Length: 353
Image (cartoon, rainbow, N blue to C red; front, side):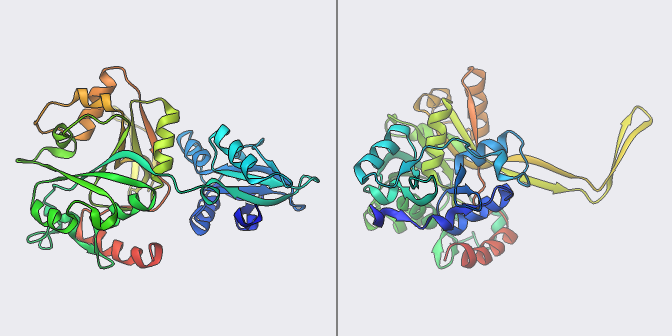
């Protein structure tokens, strides 16, 4: 079992570490866990990707110490145990990471389900919305559909597709409209990538949700819908797991976004000044353009008519079905303007290579 244990010290952090530094640890190690240890290598707790996302939703600041968000009684495994026992324990508790402790209670290793089992293959459908014109990216989109603009030598849509495939997803629908033949010619049936690709051909623009009414059959499990102009490193398996555990009909990926106002903001009551805040920063969660939907969400979609995803989710809510949110702390960029594209080129070399 020694070969299956990753170097736990790479995932170790101290109790006073800010949550924001734990996120950097996740990105640096490509593992979504941090081990909180004391000076004697005793395990105090663990922090996973899901712990951080739930903390963000609760309003816990990223400057808070890791002890505010960690699991204080994590599931652990004895050093003398074997591989089969470890895999059974992880499957029983639906966990991907398992700290290994010595008889003295000190951490000596970290087991990952990924390294101990064959890669997970996800049969969930992925629908990529790629029908937009990309008017704000003209003149680049005059002869090229927006999702086919290249970053790092490859089309944005190909980067998205390959990120899903690398995580075990293999069943795709691509919704096309503007210059859709360019997209179909490039991707074909997906055989080149070891995937199955089918197309939802919009005769007219159907919006960010309307193309779902063109699905040839009803999915039998939750499926992902994603805009075809996003550059991101989302853990899609975590997104689906987050959705499953939430019990919601739909889950919306959200991103924290701050706006700095360059002026003093004055609060008034009639003609009286109540307060003045100089150059405040407002923070909100924005729609990140990635969703997981249960199949019955399609019941709220008008057939063959234009519809946007916010309107669909509003109908789900009106039907008293819960809609959850999945905070995205990984890299995320919506490539809607030329300035976004320029930044994406710069980020690609630093983050994706």
